[in-house]
Amino acid sequence: MSLLPATVFKCLGDETRARIMLMLCAQGELCVCELIWALDDSQSKISRHLAQLRACGLLENRRQDQWIYYRVHPELPQWVVDILQVTLEANRHWLSQDEKRLDQMGGRPERRAACC
Image (cartoon, rainbow, N blue to C red; front, top):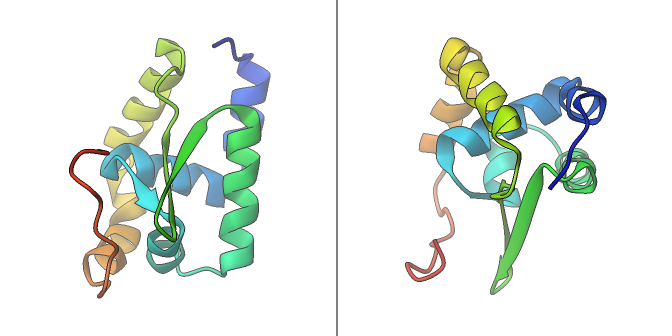
């Protein structure tokens, strides 16, 4: 997979998209409902940002029953993975409220062990 720096930085230049990417780096995989809950935002806004991240090539998704799960694309160039990891580690406090809300979410969907 080949990504240009301008594409990556433009895609990550929005706060919601950056938070989504860092949440996925921290959590591995999340469904749309978990992202809505964690980021305390509307379904339409989260879905729009997820579509943009997929179009940029930064995310991959899969369907399990009625749920659609998102994760950081496994074929990202190492330099993109490094940027995400360094940014996450240096800014965990930025996601602390999001992660706290996610931990408090009731009725989170269960993933099949074979899929993850």
